[in-house]
Amino acid sequence: MKLGAGCMWRLLLLSLLAVAVVAAHGKQPEDISDDGDEMDLNEEEMSFDCFKVTYKTPVPTGEVYFAETFDDGSLDRWQLSKTMKEDADEEIAKYDGQWAVEQLKENKVPGDLGLVLKSRAKHHAIAAPLVKPFVFQDEPLVVQYEVNFQDGIDCGGAYIKLLSDTGSLNLEQFHDRTPYTIMFGPDKCGEDYKLHFIFRHKNPLNKDMEEKHAKRADVDLKKFYTDKKTHLYTLVLNPDNSYEMFIDQSSVSRGSLLQDVVPPVNPPKEIDDPHDSKPDDWDERAKIPDPEAEKPDDWDEDAPAKVEDPDAVKPEGWLDDELEFVADPTAEKPEDWDEEMDGEWEAPQIPNPACETAPGCGEWKRPMINNPQYKGKWKAPLVDNSNYQGVWKPRKIQNPDYFEDLQPFRMTPFKALGLELWSMTSDIYFDNFIVTSRKEVADRWASDSWGLKKLVASANEVGGKVADYVYKKTDLPGVDLEEEEEDEEEAADEDKAAEAADEAAAAAAGLTSICEDCI
Image (cartoon, one colour):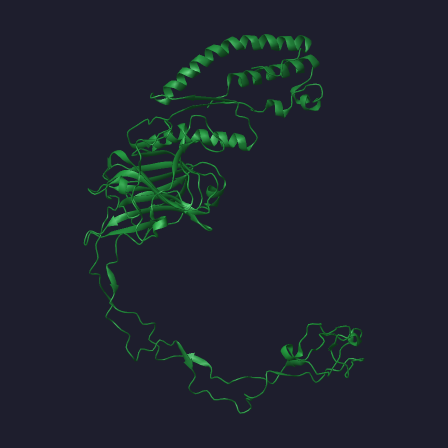
């Protein structure tokens, strides 16, 4: 991204004009703000209201195992699942959710396309093979892609699965139980916002696979699901068993595969003896009633908790003979009232009008107060239990299933990337998948793709105007094209510099106005 030539020279001309006006009036720079009427240069005119976004399909700058931009508009390398989800009703068991390759709804960058989940309340499954399988040895794993919840998200996920390199892997049969090595990405239901990192670890003793979940992110994730912006999700795994997750290139969670996953990779060396049981005479009571305590002779257990207030006096004017509620004298029995079916009719009760000005009606009773003599049921005070043995715990024994894997990074190789999703919201946008071993390759890929989306969204958010888009598709590294474009613009800009100087001089001599459209 660079300033458009027109905008750059417009700013230069306005700056030179400002200098000329100051010189003509013989004022110091600090006086300019006091004479806004004489110099029609306001903040709005000086704003960057136009710039050029040059988009070209990003090209990896290093070795990658997988890279996908969708800018060719096709899904030729991707395979839609043709299978059925097990243990589901037949109406929803099919993976018949629709996918499309489209632009973003908002903050579009012309020429930039992405994969869009189009259906709601359906199962979706699509996958693509890697250039070659990723084998966990001495190189890090870096996985990165973009997500935009264009219509927000109610309940659903946007995570990816890295499908294990097994002899039985068939992308046409990709479903929820297809073996995967890693699951990574955002997921949300209700008010539970998650960023998943799950890996499947093989038990070296019985060969069972068990899912290990990384700890939750250290930040509030809600805005990434609600702001309808494109966000960048990155996972980095290192051979030293450390991992780190990023959103928009900012770290949100980091840890160790050996210490920060649930359940732990390695089981405990010792476990509770399942056959041990607490002895019948084991005393776990830290306190017991004092066996030597006796109830005092004057302790009255029968005294009530509440008694009438002996000091209370009936208010003057209390109407003892009046009822609080009386029959409504204006009420009439309904014409369809059947006393045989409905019983004897009675007028509804209303507050007694005679009581409206009186302190009260009916029989006066003293209010109740707490009984100062009340003590309740007597209980012996508690004292330390001399026979206390502590809380019983079963004895420890050696764990027969114990093993120690100090290299959980050495996971099952994977050879495909897939999305297997259910969502109650449609139009979830995915773009620019990359799998590599070098973080700098993923960072450059993000700069050439997600970086432009972020720029356009920011400009639109603050009211900026994206005036000039250029889209170029190329197989050459992006850096070469940028250098060529800069050389061409520099040559053209040198010619305009002379014109700018002449116009500024004219402005100084005669305060000649410059055309507002200087492009």
